[in-house]
Length: 189
Image (cartoon, rainbow, N blue to C red):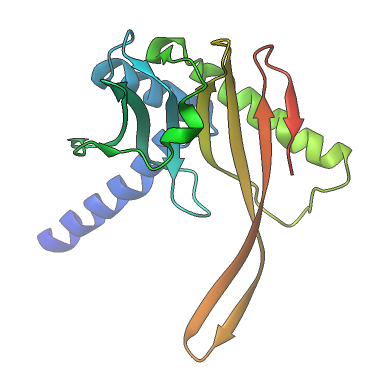
């Protein structure tokens, strides 16, 4: 009986703790802002700051940053127990023309609003499918060569599934969006 109650307690705790770090919700963003505040220096200069979730999920898995030390670009991830060891960024050439920005300048509070705007834009363009869940999977902050911060993010949705024996393969697609320096939203694809 006691063991059953403990299992039920941890199962309930696990189920209810997932929602608190959803990238697309206001509650999740408040908690993500706390994580950034507690673990990232606001003045640390980065070339990219990315909030990432697993495929077809919206719960924060990690926060990736790309930064430069002595003309070498490095990338590391923050997971809930700390930072991974830095590795040379495989995308270094993409950042050579860009200016860095401070972690504190990334406005994560706009994410829930822009998520809702993206859903509305899909409806407006006739791309929205009523029976699909549109999941905010990642959000990437970068700065251009002028130092203006912009964002890109993806909304993933299920297209269907294939079943072969006991294996079910989920087929999904995604729409990509960009938020420019003036907070204007546009559909990329």
